[in-house]
Length: 292
Image (cartoon, rainbow, N blue to C red; front, top):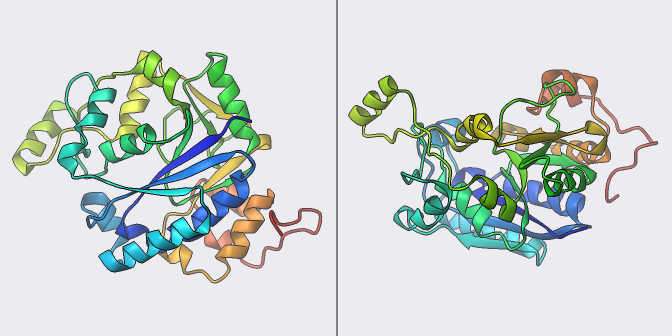
């Protein structure tokens, strides 16, 4: 199987989640993994991300975290985010006009693009560092679909979306072949909010841009094709809350998820991790833990 780059972004707010998630990725994707690229942002979070995650460690704690990350495996590679004024090299590759660094709510755009563009391999799983995965066969199926010119992006099926495609792109977990994505779809239009919100953003001195996943969803009307891979080949789980990573049972839960055994209550709850669904849930003997 072709080597895979996993490309992610990390900031101070990711202090509790980065290491357990990296360890899981190394277990799950080991056979095909070329690298895990972490684009590290030393600046304190702002906007929606800051309000979501609250208090966190400072610069020294973040540096300690990154040092621990690179010690997990030689394939973990950390690249520092440059000043935001230097990110135009990435936005110019992606957009015809305009250079969106952040969306109107403060969520990063150019930072995600840097993660994709700096990856060493052509097949890239761009994902957030609060995403867990089960199985690697979906990566091969998604890559094959892209190489047959049937899709531009692929993703494992999301709980809560039934058995069909989600109908919208999520930057939480998307697989692409960078060369063909560039050739077919880039540079793309940099989509903005509607004109009423645009006026308000000018008054607030905030940018007018939609978030990247909303832009990519808009691009589906102009030809972008998203392929959702069947659950039998793998799936993903979003563990977004800091409190979830304080759960003393989380490591066991992650390994159970990796084994492919998921409580019905979690499936019913959707893509976001539901702690109550895992209370008193035990992995059946017929499904040994991955890496055990």
